[in-house]
Image (cartoon, rainbow over the protein chains, first blue to last red):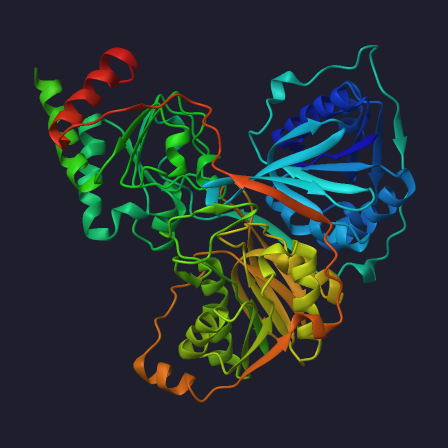
Length: 329
Length: 254
């Protein structure tokens, strides 16, 4: 089998999930006697393609064009559909980024194929690949298989594979092969403009050693002081899952998850957070995770070191009191 | 501006899930409008209030889906299309998009909106696939829409707190990010008015699109735990004392 990994840059630098996906490809290749090619797309990215060639891949495909300087779904789909048609991979793998979500399903559909997105793992069952993804916001896992002929398309969730396991090329360097694509400006219908950040965040949660995070379970903004008191007692920062910031109950800069900040504190105390994938990718690197939730089946407990099945409105004040007592004693 | 909003009905957030093969037992649980789609509906209603036109709610699934369609009509959609399909849960993303795109093609629309992803399957592909099938430009994870002179200026969310402005011509397909707006509730007046609004039902088979799947969910199951969780029990006071003890002397993080 021939595996092709579409790598991604984020503002000119490597997006680490590209390397995680390469690790996934190397592991699948080892299990199925396949070869791995890596693809670099953009403009003026030849140096980065050379860097990719130092990894354990059979070849690097370099796709460069003036119209690929900035990402557009039309440009990427037009270019990559030509590359997939000419290089004929069996399996095309992507990191599951916002950019991939934006174009990869369409790329697959242009070739009449489907894509299994947001996978967290795979199994090789006697030569047949089974992809594992989450459903019902992480409450269940699903085994998914491709139907019909190759090429097959799949993306792996950030953190599903460890990028530090990426193997270097055994004999130095793989060849970098340029692939020419034909694009014209009329094909690209959207015009990407400037990138920007909202008001500079006053708090850098990535540096906070202790984080107290709240989710939907907090129910109303009037209840937030209970969590803030707990954060104060423990000497930590308050943070939240997306719905809380969407409601405007806490500022967006305090949001943890794929669209917010990714943190790895010493302690992450999750209060009334169910543990949807989008949140978990932002905090699963925490050294110690404590989850308090009234639903014993909440997926947050899968990654918790300590779990309390109970009412956060009872636990929060009790914990604040216990922490203050511990400080004074 | 005529807008179609694709709305999925999903199991209610707090519904206890009983797994049955590659789906769940549907009896005894409640269903609701997929939350990300409610933001897309709200955005459509706001665009209509600003620019005029019509909002059409489009939903696929068995008879129960009509309840969610009625909610969309009560909130202000002008009419609705129901693609009837008792086997909707077995379609793959491409199969769903093919049916939705075929229904959209029968209408004259300027904009198609979807939510970001569904709370059940969570494929997150529908909008992008519809755009591909209808050969329309698209953009996803949209946090703001401004329309002027037949073009849109969009604010697209990127990762890690970054955003990007994009210009996109009409007609187009947009996938709306949750939190783009504050969703309205249906008023009593809206609920009454909805009773007179049209729901056109089309059988999915009659759309003449392939239901051949490119991927198949073999089974679903409760994920195996990767971490050993120590559960603390007792009264809130006892639990709090135990937890402080653990964090201090076992995990040594405070």
